[in-house]
Amino acid sequence: MRTLTSKLLQNIRLYKSLRFRIFLIVLLIGIIPAFVMRYIMVQGYENRAMNQKVAEVTNQSAIVAAHLARTDYFSDTSDIVINDELTQMSNLYDGRILVINDDFQIIKDTYNKSQGKYIVSSEVISCMNGSRNMSSQDEENRYLEITVPILDEATGKMYGALVASASTDSIHDNVEVLARRARVVEVVIAVLIIIIAYSLSLTLLKPFDKVIRAVDSVKEGFDPGVESIEVPDYTETKDIMDAFHHLMSRMKEVDESRDEFVANVSHELKTPLASMKVLSDSLIQSGDSVDAETYREFMLDIAEEVDRENKVINNLLSLVKLDRSKEAEVALETRDLSEMLQQLIKTLTPLAEESGVSLFYEEKVPVKADIDETKLSLAIMNLIENAIKYNKENGWVRVTLDADLQFAVITVSDSGMGIPEDSINKIYDRFYRVDKSHSREIGGTGLGLAITRNAVLLHRGAIKATSILGEGTTFTVKIPLRKDI
Image 1 (cartoon, rainbow, N blue to C red):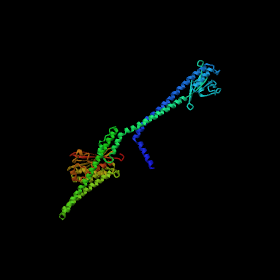
Image 2: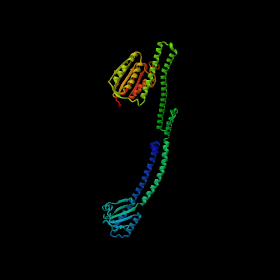
Image 3: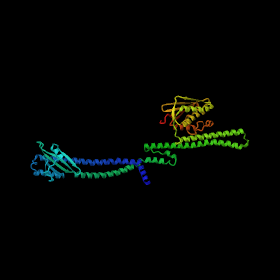
């Protein structure tokens, strides 16, 4: 059973092979015309030979019929000259001649078998009624039959009809010989075409073999040398290799990004631990000489570092959940976005007041959309919280809700420090910080915007940032209004 299955899989693989299909196409293109040409040649020869035979026998029969009409043969069938002429014609065409009078009686049969008998056939009746010549062919017995009227052209008198049968053995024999020779030529052509088709299938696909080898070379891991591989033989192979090199570059970027991510995670987790280690070692070394106030201050610092560590870990877990496909499925329900945003404003107002930032909310139209409220709330909260933390003294943050026919549009604008143009495309990278020193001071982890972007993308939405350095930043989030968008 396993052997049969493996054979079937091999056959399926063979039939799907481009090399096999090229071989088959070239083979068919070469062989089919050869078969058609053989058929046309043999059939054409047979038709021409048969038409020529019919014309020849018809002309000869018409001559004999005219001779019969001018003599008194129907009164006296013993005319030696006429009988010799009929016999010669019968021998010439290896056939049989019948002379029939106007009573449908056979008065002469070169085979001497049917004289005196009567014959009533459609061809004879047609000739008696004025048709010029009638012909029919018997493929099985290999003969053709010509029926011509015996008519006196001068007086218009109908004497009867002459039926001449002629053998077509010679024509069929020639057709068979020609067909055999054509089959030999076909076999030779087929062999040549098979060789040509096989050679072409190998030659034409050589560039694709290079592509396959290039792809196989990265199975064991990323190979920087692959970037130099070029297969310019065809436009298609060049395009494939360009896409492959782009993929390799992307893999390299992902690899570097992964290394950077690991380094950043290690750094973010190591820094609080190092701080706690220093603080705890200081307390241990000081022993009983540490007063209560200093001890309390050190413990508060340790608690802050623990909170910071916990925040980094929680944000990392949130990213992992958003990245994993099974856990990243959104539970969409129709929700009032205005209520959600007002609740977020209410929650973050104390933080804004503490930072001396004015927080405004504007609703241009009431909007309901199909969202996962938990994930989208987290995303918008990160944007508002960042706008508050990275703002100027006495600055402002404005949250606006709008909609068009397809999307709900949420904008978060601020009067903060802004983002440099060269950093605008990197702000969603994990652990990326525009101002590292300020981020440390306010406790940023560099993961908030990464979490926000992933949450928006899970809603099949989009997020865009525009910023002017020193003047402020605006984040625009678009969320589809319905599940089917």
